[in-house]
Image 1 (cartoon, rainbow, N blue to C red):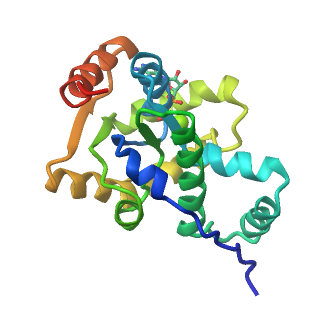
Image 2 (cartoon, helix red, strand yellow):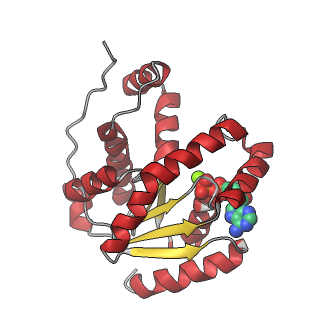
Length: 210
Ligand code: ADP
Ligand code: MG
């Protein structure tokens, strides 16, 4: 039988009461999400949460849930959507306790259903920032990152699979939020600073109250 992960009963009241803005950060692997989020955090003091980092941290922590996650990943199955969402919720609550002014949710939603579940259980996203980069640029950047990242998924075969997943699952996320009028499509082929200039112009329009 496939290993299961227990779900926790998480009280979201403090998070909902805080009514801080939430931004989804979307883009192919290597599109510069992490790079731009670091700069957004430095300028606006928002909290950056990467779902991949949360999963890796939970596994490293040695918690019972972490070892259940390891069992799932070793069995080749996908980590259930609810488990990722629980990790995100817990990290958001911790940050709210410390006075967070808002969130950058990086690497989530991967699929339209994830976005809908997040928004129905937590809160609607204010905007979705989409870093738009051509596939050959993504490959070049990831192969360059591979020289120093130590990430097992930064190799040409895995990169191709991740690009395929992005195109088939995540691109519909872009269309979905575009149809809701929440998508900010940013041409992210330029320099880090030029791209950040466009990010700032868009965030300044909606974060005047921060
Ligand atoms: P993501 O988090 O979307 O996977 P990263 O922020 O890790 O992307 O960026 C992937 C790689 O591309 C890193 O090596 C980073 O330094 C580089 N990079 C990010 N933005 C740019 C850019 N505008 N121009 C050139 N290289 C970039
Ligand atoms: Mg990243």
